[in-house]
Image (cartoon, rainbow, N blue to C red):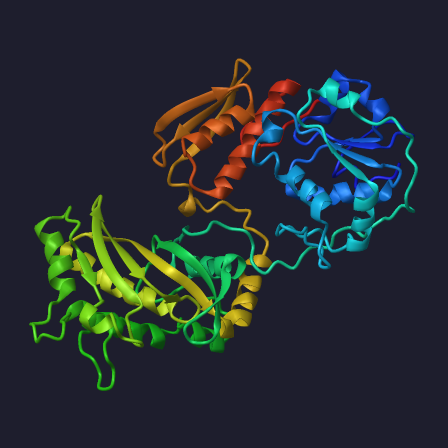
Length: 502
């Protein structure tokens, strides 16, 4: 029997003359055939259906083997009957009940079958293959219910082209809430651009143009050395530098926007005027929120949580149709001798405005640190709507292709970006894998042990002992290597390859 990519989608072959395809859903094929060997005599093919995507190889194998006239679903047991376990079998039942549309969508669902599998052949399969749901039976009973007729082909075998990689407009992601961190503004900004272009939803705006948006983007700049960008690549064209606001002139202008309270004629407000001379329309005396609300509160009480400045003036901004501040609030919070600054943007044009905004905030952050006597800490920017406008899509894509996608990952460890939650020393003792958790200062924080890498990985994940994806991947293959060393009875040394005996 011909099969579709059997190495990728394994199935068990039974009788060459049988007319049944037996789907064990989430039950293991080999366990089923071991428990009831007669299944191999009554079924031509035996396979699983772990997910919705499994519908595609199932249909491909039916098309390659038209002597299969009955498709039996055996979804017995708690896993196969769970909502996730039933996702694939529910689609099969919907397909046999309602068919597919001309564009390959199973009617009554939103699931699209691979475009290489033609609707006409799918319909031929539906009309000639009986769907038999045996999920209510124990395995022995289910096998007894299988028909024993010899398989008579209803069409010539059809081999569809393998599925082509899909052009993905937006990759799957969390609905809201993303956190990125790095040493400098430019380091983190590139990550934000990458995430918006890869994961952002394309949607409209109030201005008649489209945007890519990620809601709830939090980006943390941990150690920007100065008030101006210092790590701008030399090969970036001047036009790009001017567009994204990374030039010295653009940054100096935004320093003024945040540091000065005065407003030029024809300008309704600046962030500086709202933060340093906040007033409503009543004629009240303007309030310098930076001097009094933030610096003053921190001087009076270093642990104060009242160091907040806001830009919104409700009587003015509630009904305004233009010129409402994108930056909503800033808050300074002291921790361990460092003053950290938190800034919230309701709307944030990441490609054109985010860099100069960040350096304007850093200038203000530096003032707060100097006048309160604390060290300047991290700048944490919360972009509620982090977006890129459609006019900048092409430039943003070219930038991230060059800076991230087409660039090989760094292979040299950057100690300055080590996991702040610590590291692990792995060793083997008495046939057990020992994972010793050490803090950034080398202090031992805990010790975890098991005979399997999986158990240790699950425990470390449960305890949230790792904050970086790269660290988790590295630790995972070290733990697995240690487990192999135990099974092969060879020495294990962390960060070194196993030496296998010849």
